[in-house]
Amino acid sequence: MEPPARTHGGVGRVLSDIQQKHIMRACANRCECCKREYPRYILEVHAIGESSRINERQVVVMCAQCWHSTKNLPGHSALLRSIIAERPPEIRAKIQRILVKKSAPYMPETEFDLAEVFAEAYDNNGMDLFLNGM
Ligand SMILES: [Zn+2]
Image 1 (cartoon, helix red, strand yellow):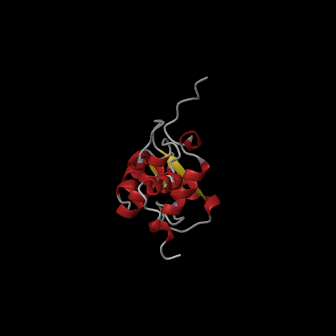
Image 2 (cartoon, protein in one colour; image 1 turned 120 degrees about the vertical axis):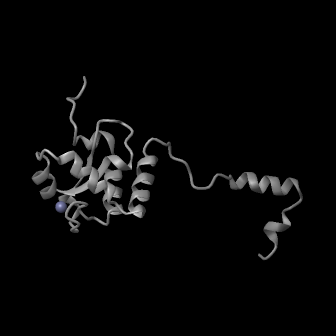
Image 3 (tube, helix red, strand yellow; image 1 turned 60 degrees about the vertical axis):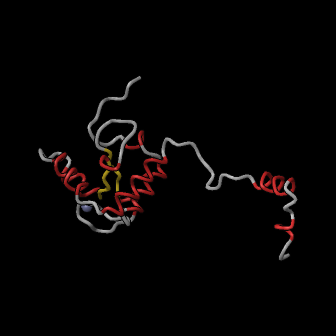
């Protein structure tokens, strides 16, 4: 069953709770509209558009008050775009990293296997490397 098409909202289908939390943190828990800091439950992450793969240009963090006072304005989309356009580059980069993580499977930070490194060293008579300095 297809959910009804919506221009805004429905962010829960696109972003996990954790991603939303990380995005709010990237914005220092501030509303990007009024720039005030709020407890997280006041803030909302909104996605523009319905794409299942959204980018940083399609998300905005707003407090409930800003959202509700602007969502029905004729220039709403333009307002959101201008808010996003003014976003500082470091926040932009953080949000993009959070979004990119979404579809990638979990990858450990380190790629080498310690047992393999050990076995290779043993084969090369390189065990001294491990024993020295102990
Ligand atoms: Zn606000």
